[in-house]
Image (cartoon, rainbow, N blue to C red; front, side):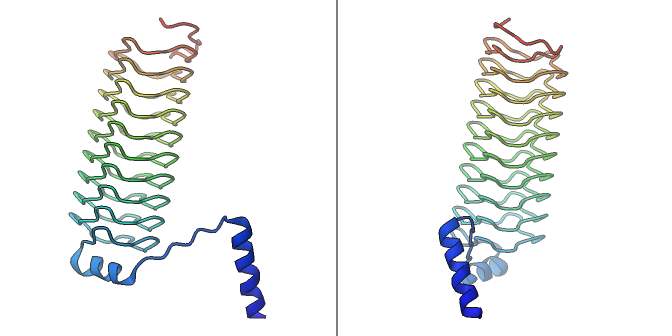
Length: 238
């Protein structure tokens, strides 16, 4: 009976292709626990919840699907790491180096990423609800389809970042640098954009209803089809 069950399960996995299996290297996990570092290690699917990994060197490591809920990663080196599908909710990543990291579909809700380096990071379809990203460097980062509702992005560097179809409702973008950012079809309802720099940004079909834009710079921004703060649709650039 057990053999039949296993065979049926294998067939289902092969036919559907919907089951993702993560397998970490036990030696790499032990190394991390003993030394606090494991660059280029295989930690896919590992349970690292609540661990103190402040200052850890995890550059280039495979952390796909890992559980890093509430983990302390302040000033950790996570450059180029694979964090796809990882749970980083409520993790502390203050001043961490995540440049070039792959965070597609990762859960970063409530995470602390103030002053973190996320230049060129891939964050498509990730959850960053209520995350702290103030003064973070997200230049060139890809955040297409991500959920940033309520996130704090005050004074963040988002130059040339891709935020198309992202959710930024009630997000704090005060004094954020959004020059040449792609905000096409982005929801910015009730967002705070005071003194934000949106020069040459692409805001086509974006929703800015009830957003606060006092002092914001929209010079040469493309607002065709965007819903303005008063609820009116822009048919042409102002």
